[in-house]
Amino acid sequence: MFYHVQNLINPIIADEPDPSAANALQEGLGGQFGEMRTMMQYLFQSFNFRGDSVPYHDLIQGIGIEEISHVELITKTIAALLDGSPAYQGKKFETPGKGGTTPMNEAKEQMNPQHFIVGAQGALPVDSAGNPWSGSYVHCNGNLVLDLLDNLVLESTGRLQKCRIYQMSSNKTFRATVSFLIARDEAHEMAFGKALEKLGVNWNKLLPIPKFDSSQYPEVKKLIDAGVNREQYHFRLDGSEMARIFSGPAPANDGSELTTLKEPVESYTTSPGAERPEEFSPGLDPELQELADALTDLKEKAKRGQKPSNGVGKKSVSRK
Image 1 (cartoon, one colour):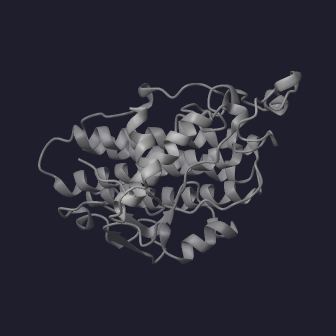
Image 2 (tube, one colour; image 1 turned 180 degrees about the vertical axis):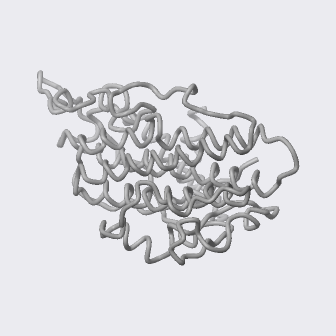
């Protein structure tokens, strides 16, 4: 089973909306080599794992659990890049489009108008061309060496594509997330390369892929300097044998060392997206909003051990 902390693995940096950048980032989410595939591929490999090679199981599963947080991060980033892009100025309970106005006019000009029609200015499980994510992307061969090879190719291709995506926008929201994923993809390349190295395969002349100095990207350099590209997390409460593989010299043969940790050193707070009346999201009318506010008030007072006010209590009882 899994436990969840309502924090992000990397912060969302504030900047202006950029729907085009959001659409490019969809490739890193729902593309054939995106985060949805890495998450599902590693989890299925760990669930179907055979034999008693526990360290290899723990390595694959730990990275798979981390990928859940990457899917969360990238969806939140896409939503942040879309949020508010139509620049609607109407009040909360006004009817958007009243009198024949077109507050969503800009949405039809975007590369994927489904971000607005279907997603209410949020991420979708699709690639940058709008193709839906497919379970057929997932490779779970049942052969440890072949799975590790598959995973190394997946991480390398994902990192290559993110290095291309990085160059498509200077938006700070976009760059912060893409840079973090570039650094973590390199860590995962090292992880699967090290696992194969333990099995007798020497990768030190190949990794990382693509082989270039990613410290030339200033946002990535900051992460490299912090060691983010040489850490791996197991997220286990009951102990893990991941460190039997992910430790010692990195397969890149650059003098760096691999470090296994229980979890990332830092995590970052997140909050719900802003209300978008032009999308009818969340779509509460004044009466429903009053009920929602009353329920929130009850929960907050229950946490503090206080009794609800008579007014709130009467409303809550009479509405049921």
